[in-house]
Length: 304
Image (cartoon, rainbow, N blue to C red):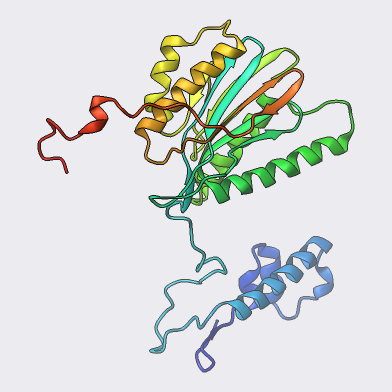
């Protein structure tokens, strides 16, 4: 029912009744309302509350010329989605070694193409058995950490002597990322999750749309293109801690040379059965005297 004078949409209660019995009650004025069951009464009660919400929140449902409205605008009609990330971190590289998991990431965060922040930690521990690294939007990473804090707190409240392992946390993150992707409001991150529980090493990653896999070594961002080939050539199952750190540093050095968003300030973290250790920030030794760096556009016709 439309009230053209007031310009508002006023559906009758019978319009809100899905059950044929309820429609009959309101269509037949002589039928006693006492015949309504408890469930029918509750349905009508909440339908009436919804009717009030519609009349309160919706703008005029009739055009000025009295024509039919295009659609009923809900309360989320004006909501916006993140169209692109603002402050972002670059690659994360991680691998398994003989005692656990090693993970490396630099501490830069770019505001667009400007390297704005240089002390952002992108590796965090999750519970007792897991280590998380993230590239992408920093604020979304902070939101994910809040989700994980709630998850770990809920798990600890059971006080049953058990705790979530890296596989469970990784599965949880895949569901979170895929859920947000289905809402067309993704968390703009690529995540690396590693850990050790009951002697079992686990390493996996999940993208911003929920694509996920497990492997012996993983990388995000530019690391997928520049670090993974190095890892495929040099990684082996019995890698020692020292050799694993050298391999990660080699990957991070290549990324520093080639990735404009990388900074020479990184952290390396390890997780074993004994727990999590995240190093203090430090810089790599670099060499910029390569001939290719002196005049990089030689032989590149049409280049700037």
